[in-house]
Length: 276
Length: 247
Image (cartoon, rainbow over all chains, first blue to last red):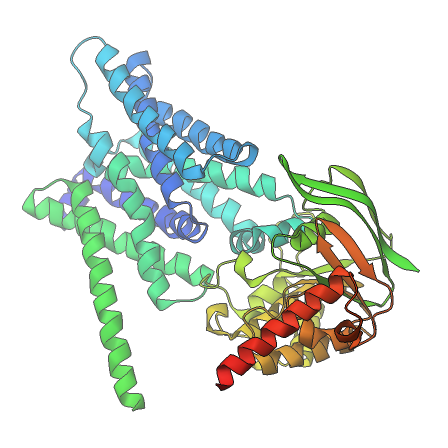
């Protein structure tokens, strides 16, 4: 595999894409899990499928369409949640299915042979091109800076939004920025693990990290490292056994989760014995 | 001198009336209890004072020089959140106008340390907040509220989920703070709290105020005052529970 990385452009791209997405998973995944935005993120991921279809239909880069749909969904969910009493989950599921429905519709309406959608549904890390890589780098830098430079505020917003309001902090601005960042992150992940699997990549590493740390910054760092391990591990496995990369990455991550739970319970039991 | 003046306050949640025609004043350095049944509008009143809820009509005037501090109910945030005691308290220092790459100043850290020591939680500073008892968590929230040097401290049920001994401790601590700070406290623990309060306001959609509350009076008068009825009810309930426990 090292050979392939050194010799083939697409392998280099795949490795860089896996590393970049692990940074996103670490930072945004932790935020999504701690702010209880998992189902919203799932909704955004699926809604973006409509944009991908629209992209094909209109003849523009599909991922751009996905980006637009993801951002609109994420801001709309926030807006509707604030303005009405409708249960957020209900709104989310509407966007969720509307996005998928639109995607299918657009693909059907697109003239000529229907494009292969599996790479968007389940990801294809080996098909990451130069342009996409640049977009990924740009978005990753943006996320790192926006979260890093205002970290204290994000921490307060995530932990106790109401208290932030009482302190006079403009919570709405934070919320809008966060929702946009979530939309961007999800679209980045779509290329790597796909619409259906992206949510797992955002939630599994933080779920494992939380077993071992009680510090938000560390949780992000550990999730990032785990994301990298799962991404590269899955990539390697899929390369050698010749199976789909996205699905392999997710299954590696989920295996990692169960191993961690098991590991932690054994560790605790042993510690208890020492105490006794 | 009154530090908060509430006049003809009406607050609605959509069509539901939460508070109607509430009138009262909070005097400087007083220890004011807010009591009443669940769903009676106690928290709504406090949220309106804090500016979290827009009144439908009426006015709330907080005197200019006053700074509000707030201790929310423990259920409003996630106890499993990956954050330590120290981090929660230092958040109280965050400037309201969002600053890039904000870091706490040494002065602010020293202030947090002093407050933590005074409230007896300094040794807990590195604990994740889920590992604290109810009483300890309340102290952390009080410490956070004290970070911006409030002149009025508003507490929403600071003794819910706190054991009897720790309750007494919290009341005594508040009493000490009360020497320099006005305190508004929502509580169900009327029986234990009554001795510490200067005045009581009873909120159940409307407000009813006791101007001069004498301890023990509630048990003898038995008039139609809702405060007496409410407190008596709580005391009777408590006694019933205690006798049940003994038998």
